[in-house]
Image (cartoon, rainbow, N blue to C red; front, top):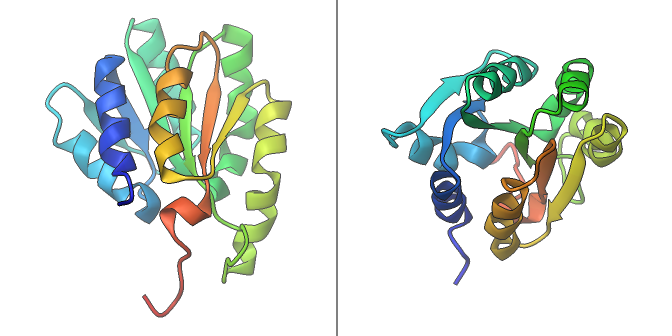
Length: 167
């Protein structure tokens, strides 16, 4: 049986006392977003663009609260300039990134950023962890929540499923 990684990640967020969850709507994160929205101890903030999540995280951190940012790999390109704040100010943000553009991707527009995501994040000083299987997601998120610096957990497209126009 496939692990319910969104439930396990939600549990890890609660255990780490994450109070603010910024996200851009994404099918790969839909169940996790629903769980966070239903959690009275978490404030779920829908963003119009991913870089707003960096500002949200900075404000949360300055206010003594933990936050995470949920996004798709195509949105990583939107956070690059703002991500410099994370390293410079030592903000311990965890980004949970659903990957697109990997093997089996039907949308060729997703491939460039999907391929570049790990290197782009690392270039901005973000530690990158990769979950290739569903059972790896929650432990990587849990470990990342203990880091005193910015970390991204990349969730393989094999975990979230390959999208198609037929669905």
